[in-house]
Length: 96
Image 1 (cartoon, rainbow, N blue to C red):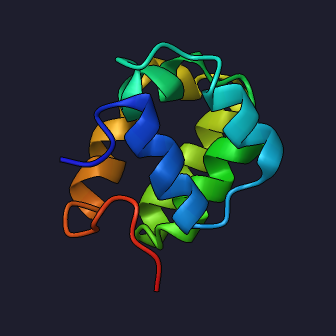
Image 2: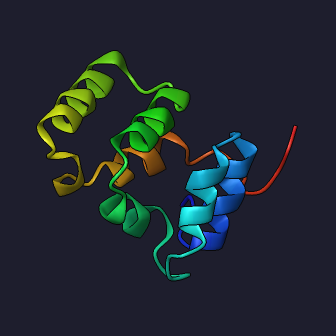
């Protein structure tokens, strides 16, 4: 399982070179939010699209999510599960 706590999520996104404003925003969330909570609360579709683009999800999945971002429907879906499944092999907080 990936990023079940906010601290794990921040460490993981630092590893992926996420922008400073997104990391600052994450620090305002409860520790228990992790990826699922952050995904539901995030109002920045550009951050969400950055994340899925960096995960190299299948093109069809990325197109679906991009369309739903355009429609404002992205937070209604549980794409955190797709991201978690895709990244299950990553080690949280490690750097190359």
